[in-house]
Length: 196
Image (cartoon, rainbow, N blue to C red; front, side):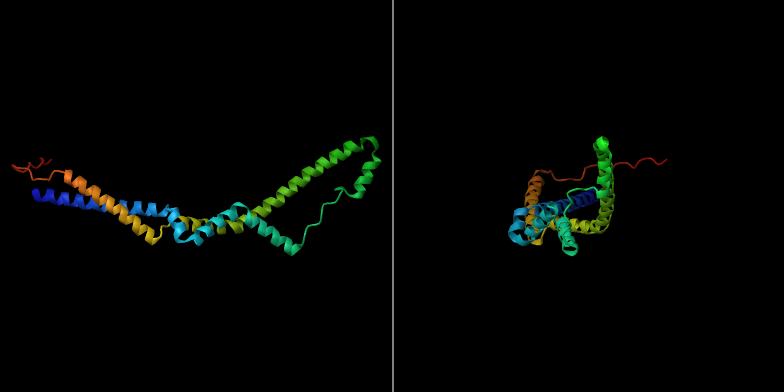
């Protein structure tokens, strides 16, 4: 019985030390991943590239580049005309007399509604095409940025792991000194439970 108790205690202590080691690795990994000042000191170019890329996306850089490329290929768009209505419509409106302002207002409102609707249709198609192309690229870029930011580098991780292990070892030694030793109970072994 004493041997079983000692073996069980050894297994518990081994599991506890394994858990403590895994917690130490997890803590060191987390601390190394969020140690931004150390990352900046070790590789300022990488940090500048990540921050620059995030700023580029935040300031709508891809949209501006796309617009500039489109303008370079197709040329500058023609300026808007002074009057948006064709000459024939203008002549018809002049012939209507006093009610011309009301007719003009109605035509302009209807045309404005039509223009808004057609703009929404064009934008929805353009947005659909852009998202079909850009979404995989943005997903891949976001994953790369996340991996870069949250992946600890080896030297920083090792240093943090040694700090955590040292702290945990000192805590373990202090708690081990406080624990009473396990001794085998004196007397006969307990009776087996009755069988049914």
